[in-house]
Length: 92
Image (cartoon, rainbow, N blue to C red; front, side, top):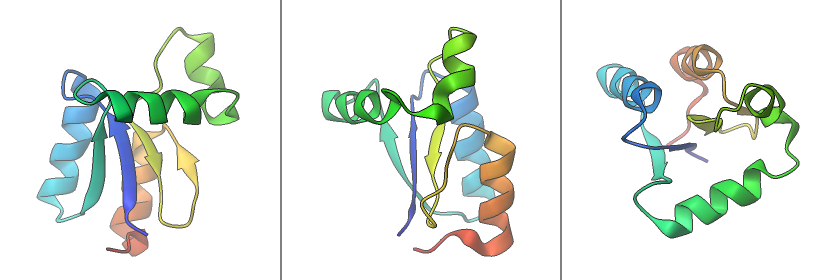
């Protein structure tokens, strides 16, 4: 499974992490939640009741970029995702 990234190209954090992935030849499946309604609906369904987003909810943040790593781990921590994928954890 390839890493899935939910985010938005109008979000600086999303743009920055996607640029880092590209520079490091890390392939991901990007789902832009502001470009396609289907991606937004999927993201909302993933976010509802998901403890991964607890900190984002407490601070009135959306929780993007959101990563589903190849091993199924979910995170909104960009450093954690980048480290995991640079360590060879991405399957294409």
